[in-house]
Length: 86
Image (tube, rainbow, N blue to C red; front, top):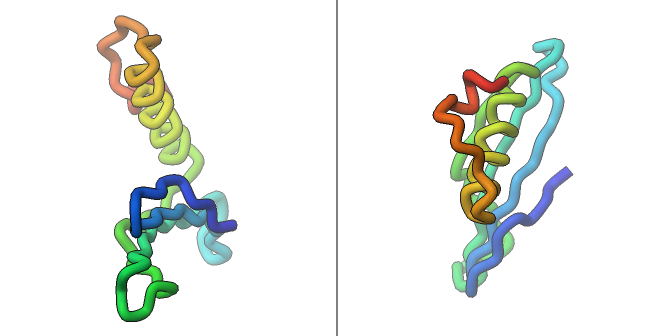
């Protein structure tokens, strides 16, 4: 499922996650962008593609949660990295 997570002016950023059938327990994430002012505004441009297992996914989730907490001013004082917390 493709989900738009950022919209700034003429730019759109989306993330899509798909299971990887040939790698049990793995998921492929793709972050893509669109520029509405481009010649072909519907064309996606891949910014990042990564395949992770459950542990890698947990680390990504922890890093994103840590960033949200920092922005909200609710970050803990822990100096452990998301990888150490997962």
